[in-house]
Length: 122
Image 1 (tube, one colour):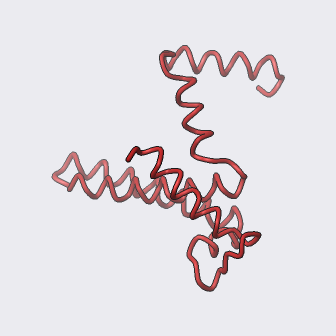
Image 2 (tube, helix red, strand yellow):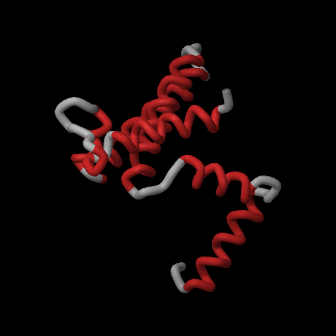
Image 3 (cartoon, one colour):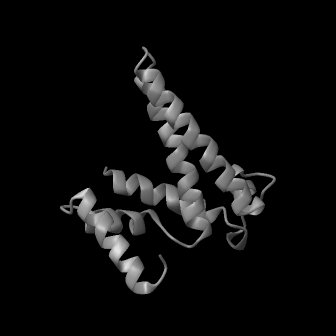
């Protein structure tokens, strides 16, 4: 079983919790997050990102590696909810990561900056 399969299965469950698919905010945490709209799930992403940072810093001082894994899982999960809200999928993110593979980070950043300049968004 691949990681992509796990992400796809989780994304399918999240998709099934959308109101248009019968998701009930009274019975499902995901449906409740989606019902609250971006303010609800984006707040959770911010909280989880902070908890990831704290767990990583704790690792430098004897913290448990599993704490970082747990917090990262929470961050990824809530990020998947955001993707679903905007009708995107984990596959969209994986394709972007694949596109960037082999590009140096500085090279990729410079390319995005040049594209933004051309588009007049910078």
